[in-house]
Amino acid sequence: MELKDLISGPLVATIDADSISARRYLSYFYELAFDSYNHVTGEVGNLRMLEFTYSVQEGRVTQQKKASIPLMTLVPLPLLQVKEADFDFDIQIIDALDPDDHSTFSLRDRGDNAAPKQEGVKLRVSMAASRIEGDAESKIRQGLAANMKVKVKMRQADMPGGLSNLLNLATNNLQVADVVEKKEEPQKNE
Image 1: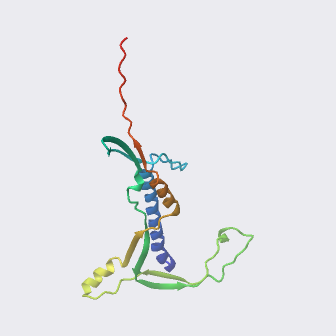
Image 2 (image 1 turned 90 degrees about the vertical axis):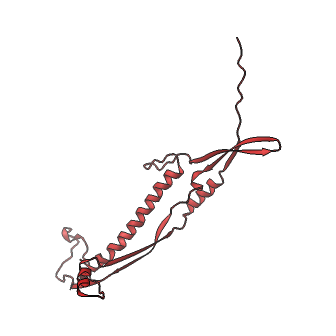
Image 3 (image 1 turned 60 degrees about the vertical axis):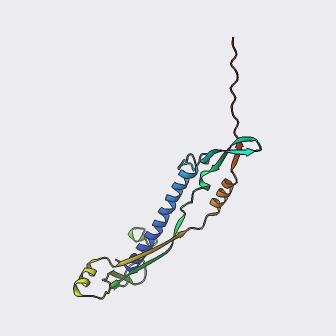
């Protein structure tokens, strides 16, 4: 393979992994935060609320209160991103190919020559066995094993401004109300 493909492959895979993580986070967020979500229109339902009642003693009177708190303000959000990715691999240059000096370019002929030619020397490479210390048997096993080491560090992603505003609104949406007890009306005899 070409050297650029060998180097770009792990980079593209890292970007794809970060993208998949972001999509999975959004899916989790919609499920946690809202009653419904339409992925076609982007419309969401009401905020999921945690509702509970509690008693408050005011003098000699005990009063029931009902509180509603948005669920998303109580659960940590797993917003992660790739902070650092280290790729360590050994390569062996097989050969270098010069560009074809005899190719022609024409604006009139838009056949197979329509794609621009890449310029410069193409380096074809293969993965090379890592250099290791040890006996011949361990060196043979290492030559047959993979020789790329990948180290990925994750970190908590910075909170997007929109999410910060949404959490701020949700946090300020704490609702406390008195619980009104329904009294049964006496039945009328006819």
